[in-house]
Length: 164
Image (tube, rainbow, N blue to C red; front, side, top):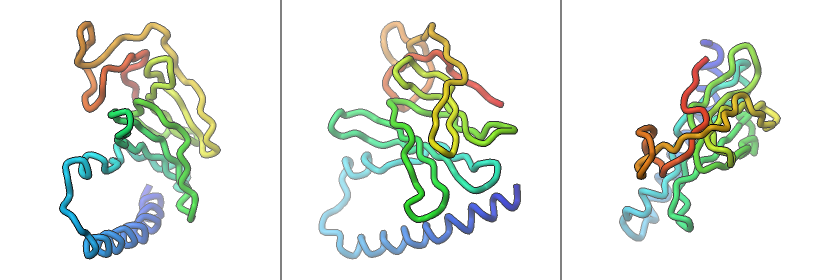
């Protein structure tokens, strides 16, 4: 685990330096103050999971879709090489990203059109179903919806939680 964290730190540190230098450069050319729309449109990393071998990282990015006025999610996989960051899934809802014990790849809850179910993905970006429950339940702030996850519009869930 220590080796994995060292590898992760070596890969992320240069990227953070690049980002901080770009942010510093951008602020010197800023011609207007930030607006609420600017702040709301900043992508947010919600979950990260380093592969068991330490050679790749998966992460979930929450982004604002200003055209549809909705929050969307992207599942990314990176191998820490230039150009190695790939979006392998876009969905109205993705959460609970974890490595799968004893296997390569990750598991996560996502809505791929059948309500939120449990899926797996590998480094080759192949997504497979792990658990699918066809009897979904509406979760969210809406009439008839059950209390549950926040930061999202009402969503149908077949699988609401899991852990390894």
